[in-house]
Amino acid sequence: MTSQELKQCHDRIKPYIHRTAVLTSSLLNEISGADLFFKCENFQRMGAFKMRGAANGISQLTALQKEKGVVTHSSGNFAQALSLAAKSLGVKAYIVMPSNAPQVKKDAVKGYGGQIIECPPTLQDREETATKIQNERGATFIHPSDDLDVIIGQGTAALELLEDHPDLDYIFTPVGGGGLIAGTALAAHYYGNNCKVIGGEPFEVDDAYRSLLSGKIETNTTTDTIADGLKTQLGVINFPIIQKHVSEIIRVEEQEIIDAMGLIWERMKIIIEPSCAVPFAALLKEKEKFKHKKMGIILSGGNVDLGNLPF
Amino acid sequence: MTSQELKQCHDRIKPYIHRTAVLTSSLLNEISGADLFFKCENFQRMGAFKMRGAANGISQLTALQKEKGVVTHSSGNFAQALSLAAKSLGVKAYIVMPSNAPQVKKDAVKGYGGQIIECPPTLQDREETATKIQNERGATFIHPSDDLDVIIGQGTAALELLEDHPDLDYIFTPVGGGGLIAGTALAAHYYGNNCKVIGGEPFEVDDAYRSLLSGKIETNTTTDTIADGLKTQLGVINFPIIQKHVSEIIRVEEQEIIDAMGLIWERMKIIIEPSCAVPFAALLKEKEKFKHKKMGIILSGGNVDLGNLPF
Image (tube, rainbow over all chains, first blue to last red; front, side):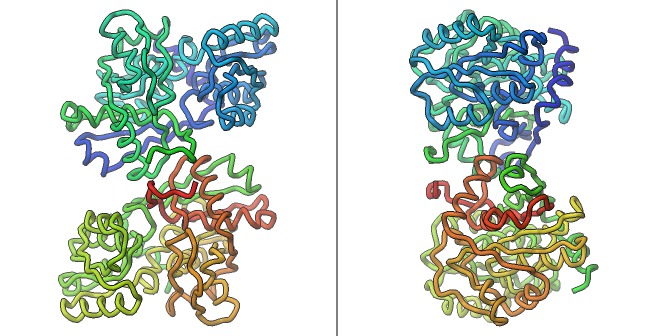
């Protein structure tokens, strides 16, 4: 990818996304000892940064591809993002979801106009069902995180953050499937002023941490984390970008995630989802290293089930 | 009061307050059928509009008065506001609180540097204790809502909102002690373009609704509402302003408050307290009247106990 491609992507998806606010909090600056700039993708359309990648993925299709629609498998934010991006671009979206996905997630996808295809709750079934939709309907598969157009789309959040604050020393993001951190790392590489990118990851799903150590993609053996958006695995497209451009992954405990989430809710009065609290938890955990630095933090999303909160 | 005084107040308190964001939501516009502009006083310092009135109340004191400190009785947001405003202005704040006030509220006041004086949990005890502090320490009493300087201070939220959006047709606020709605009504009167002010009030504490009907200050016989910030009574200074400049009070049920609060949490991803949801609940309840109008809504505050949510 070139620096130009990121800007072109940003121009391309601008009609379909919000330029989200960057918030600061003197109380959280005090607690962390650093200058924090929170990029509020929880305020993004459908409530998460995934809207960016989905919009770019669909925008890049040919007219014929657009006519046939897109398909993905996801029960999380990317399902909603692809549905809404497709609707915004006048394209049909098929969303393969496990039959046991929560009704609230199914309703959200339907609300954004996505057509749900249910399948048994295994990865193999999800992939097979998605392939079937590709074959039968000619729909184009768009992966939630391991797709270069999606990665570049996710990078536009950091691009905007660096436009607003060009002198950030670090940008923190969560690490799930790897799309956001890879896109962020590219944005920081091309547009930062020696800006380092660091990932936050729960100990429970530390595949990215271990993959960077071993030099090959590792899988998760446990996934018992409150950060449900981060259970996914790194992919072959984003991993080399992460290897090359991400400085470090910091792992955090479950209670540290809940505490960081509570701090942001209580002090900033904004709603973030558990996955979104992970990079802030990571920063607090090693705050001595970042004293007096200018820190960007991508707040990745705000979709929570209010009936099931960890407080 | 003159229009000039409101502007002067605003200039006076600017160093001590945030100019809060005005947020919009296309989803909530769709649901309400109107154009909504949310003035986010939940992002104000200490989490509520009360910071404005407290800062103005203290700013207006003489040097001698400032030396002796200020006193109020409150277990709610005004206790925190007066503590933080006093600290910001280098003044001592004595906060009379009922002995059964929640520890979290006592901690918040202490955190902002207020000195708590506990008293038995009756209104008479609160008033007597506050009088004692005035007499013994020479502190100046500042009422949370029935004080012209406090009222004018609260009006600066609407002043900012009208500076940003001069053509609002209506501004909605909650009605508790009456300070916010009285200040808002003055701001709309002087700086609005035929902008009407409407209050939202729970049925459970509808003293303002009944007072406007009867022409005299009525008291609440029930106070069993989730909107704990609105249990207070109108006062002799704010009531005539409300009579003259407020168009209407709309009453809402408890479930309507919870639903409106949930909508704002889920759709806007911001944290508001139950009292703060009341005007939006009122607007939704009578939304046919406000179709296609430009509506300002003062989101009064965001201080909630995360361990005790109504969802």
